[in-house]
Length: 193
Image (cartoon, rainbow, N blue to C red; front, side):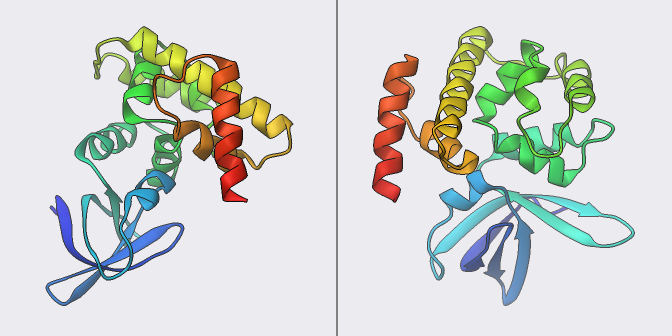
């Protein structure tokens, strides 16, 4: 029904953004990945949207790019995965890495998402692994494993899980060894304090 909303970013909060388009303020629920990609208030923004209507409300969920929107909609086809859970899954890692994890049948990577248990993660893998494809899935999953390990070490050092994940995800893709990832992430975390 609504594929995207483009207009002036009125405001952005942790869980949603308000975009004014044609004199209407659209409240669009977002994940942290999308939140980080949004410009400052007053600047033009575009969010690709998924329209959800149910008994309690009519809601829009928005993403900075179409691949994120497509994966969100696929995740919502799985029994037991609602829009909030799908948003949480999309915050685990990049769309490519999450897709690769599903293709490689790595439910253990999906349980990192808030509200996703082992059974739901296994159901996602079972129902979606034949519906998606991506080249180099195995290499992407290995990179995702290294990122998870780096995040766990940072949390063990006392950093907040959300900050640790953001620091690791901000690293260039060529940062491959655990030691290099930790050094670079610690530098990033040191700059934010």
